[in-house]
Image (cartoon, rainbow, N blue to C red; front, top):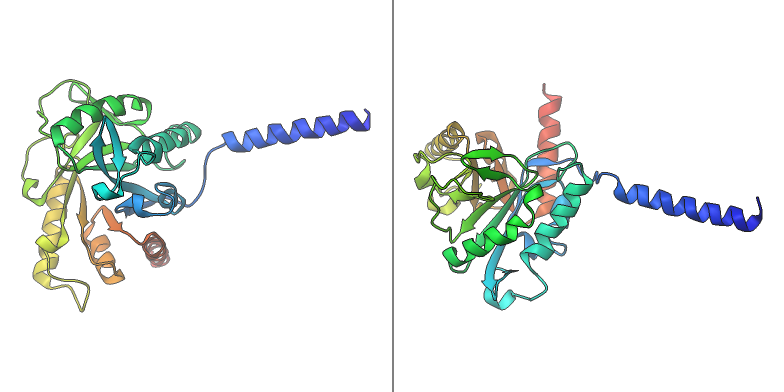
Length: 277
């Protein structure tokens, strides 16, 4: 083999190796079941920063503008290049395709919360169309039967009116509130109970949590879990005392704007629990 042919062979080998690496599963951090990225789009790399830290739930606020879902907390933050599809749906679809139909190779459940800020009904109709383009990766409800997918979409914020008995294809569930704890709608229709922490609790992490508030939190979690719904709060104080109580009570998703701090806490807490077994 000549020097030129050897060089060509090495170049081809390098290209094939690069393709093999690129097409392999995305490992990254071990997934954190309780980690939820609140207002995820404020981070430098929306979605990707959360995934790199093992977060299994992210939240995006959206406005429907000229048929497109633009991502932002307020209208003055919106930009035409920051869409629900470009920041979340398309990157998740690529990742799921690469990870054997999962967001994380060894973990099945991942939540995408879509917080609608504009008119609920108009947004709902367009959301159905947009999500149908990503049906292969989404949890689908068809005729009341659930077909689990890599990504479960939950609509929050301005929630549309949806008939629980509607047997047509549905690619999202609705976010419930504490006032919905006794609802008898199925879990696939309302997979989550979320609420403002400050509407139900006064404790902010200073000193021990009052016994009455701890008991109230446990009742909320117990009722939600009995109905096979997950629990999330927003506006929770960002400190380890509160995170520890939420985790101890069985709150499924702990929201944060501080990805590194919550990830470090959850990993340290998990290591501590393992060492005590």
